[in-house]
Amino acid sequence: MASQGIVRLNEELIEGFRKLSTPNISDALDKLGICGGCKGITPVVPGTKLVGPAYTLKYVPVGTVPGTVGDFIDDVPPGDVVVIDNGGRTYCTVWGDLLTVTAVRRGIAGTVIDGVCRDVPRIRDLAYPIFTRGCFMMTGKNRVELAAVNVPVAISDVKVNPGDIIVGDDSGVVVVPQEKAAEILKLAEQIAEAENGIEQAVERGMTLAQARASYHYHQLQNKQQ
Image 1 (tube, rainbow, N blue to C red):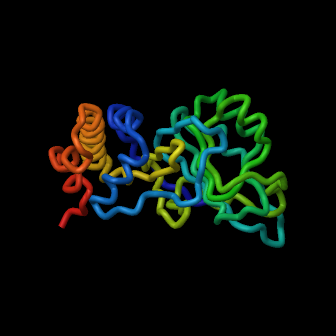
Image 2: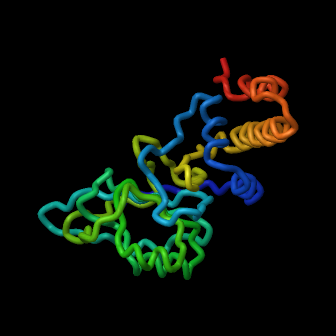
Image 3: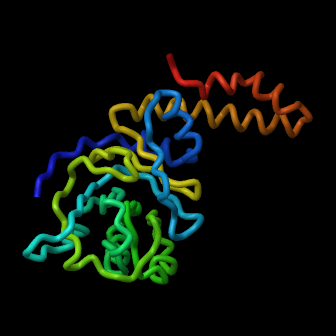
């Protein structure tokens, strides 16, 4: 299986994204003309959040010789987000209760799957942050196999490189390219600060239009030329 090294971002950057919502980050991505929102990927357990560098996996249909779904979980560093490209398949799962229990024990930040998971009661019991296209009970064993680890993958047509920052909350999942992470974080923080100020201004009786204008809100969101 092909693999490549991961460039690790500093913890200060990751902690910065932990304080932000996916809408704030998405607006910052839009301003830079970067597509980062993963359409159709939602939390299995509402109220959970994940933030961390991507540990990527690529699955393909099995050939004439059945492959394995892999015991990759033992190699995932604590704090990483497992990102599984299962090609959007919803007819078989690549994540179940044994992976959930192991991930929690190892301190893994969460999981994102372009596909489905199963054993939902265990996921809910442990409040494990996992974001998928839904749930289905049929195993991926003898249906798909692990083809590559830590290579570029796609989640809902959004490219994910190993080490990119993944953020997920109740609004969905966004992918932050690691080479633009510092710039995106700064913009997202400015947008969040402006929104907080606008809310306070409205509470004081200012109209929404006036409040937005006073904080130059639309300029913050408009795509850079």
